[in-house]
Image (cartoon, rainbow over all chains, first blue to last red; front, side, top):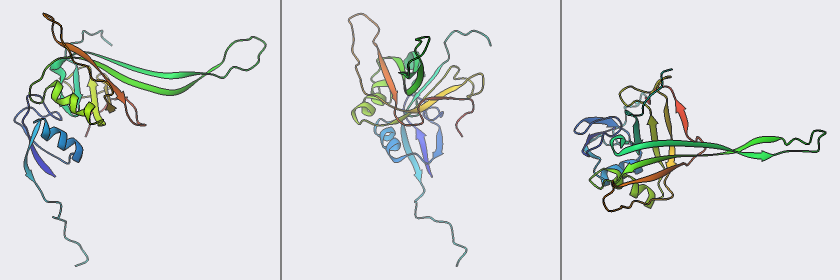
Length: 56
Length: 143
């Protein structure tokens, strides 16, 4: 899960400019949105952080 | 159902709200007509509906700022990308039975902005349905 901030002049995924939102965007969609300045990444949770297994 | 004047429509391309940069939307959804006529006493033709071709034409105002029309659509065209598209009649309320939202994944095969001296800069963009799901109306908002 990644936290984004809407940086462009137009709303993104229903969120207005300046708003933060959490989403798992498709990597290609994220790449396009970052490239055109629609969004900026605020915080990204590493994918390596897996939930603890019950097998332990 | 009341009649309406199109004023509050919502147009999203690749999740970017381009409503304020658009001034017309037109869906075309057409099944091909396949002639399956055989010999008959009446001589009347018989048809079946064949494959479906769908597209949405949106007239945009030419706008070249960060995250606006050109910066949103040109990379999609250039990269041959398949992106989500959505349109509903009233942006102030979520999708519902009385405010159905057209959604689907689309491609932009042709991109042709331009300008004429003294005229408002507008140009049409056709979004073509790009996968088997096609373009369809939904009566519930996206989760």
